[in-house]
Every structure is written in structure tokens, then in C-alpha cells.
Image (cartoon, rainbow, N blue to C red; front, top):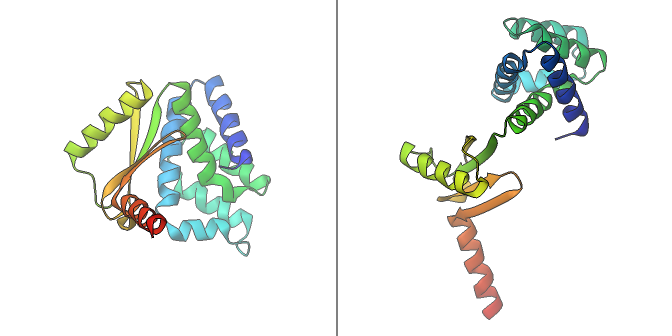
Length: 178
């Protein structure tokens, strides 16, 4: 995460705190992040230097027309400062900072296939045990390259129980003994 994105996120959180709308803006930022991350066309448009900043701003204000005035202000400020490409990172930073202020721990689990509800509850229990916090959000990602098992990240802690990792360890052990 860039320092600039974190600064913008802190600024919008401060503005939202002043107007007591931090939860509303949190919902906005979740929507903004999911929308941008879910659309390669939108990502390309934001990164494209050929498209005029004014056109990008108008497109984003239409896409996010249902969002709060704070979110619209953020888009306008990012356009004015030629930092519109940071919008997704600012939204992600806001989500992380907001969760941090509420004591909510964010965890990411990477699996080869979609998590079953049973496995998800086991992972949640493990995250609660690791963090000592009852307030946990779980983000699930799918990466077939890990073959099986899972990789769990909580803050700067990573627990790798993937089959790909175990095969890599086995290969290193064989290489050492030959």
C-alpha cells in the first residue's frame, strides 16, 4: 500500500468522523474497492493516461452516484491532485484503518478451491485463537497453484499449510541429502 493512499484514507476517515458518517463511508469504500477490483475495464480506464481526468471523474461519479458526498469529494480531490489511479488503494486503506480503529482483525485465507462453510468456521476459530480477538473478518482467495491445503495471513503473520509448500520443502530436503 502506498503512503499516499494511506494519507488520503486517513484524511477521509477524519472528515467522516467529523460528520459522524464513518460507517457510511466504510460501506462506500467497500463498494468502491469491490467494484474497481472486480472490473478490469475500470482498472484500465483509471490507469490510462490518454483518457482525460475530467472524463474519468464524470464516469466515476456516475458509477458511484449512490455513494455519500464524502466519497464524491474523495474522487474530486484525487482528480484535482492527479492521483485518481490510487482510488482502489485508498478504499482498501480506509477499510483497513477503519477495521483497525474498531479492533477488527482482518485475515486472508488462500485455498485451491472455494472454502466450505465447515472449513471457514475452523479457519475463523484459528484466526481468533491467533489474534485473541473475537472481531475478525475473513477474506477468501482462490489460487489453484497451491494444489491443496491453505495459506492464512493475519497482519504480518503467515501460516502456510499448502501442499505446494510441503512439496517445495520435500524437494529442498532431497536436494540437501544428495
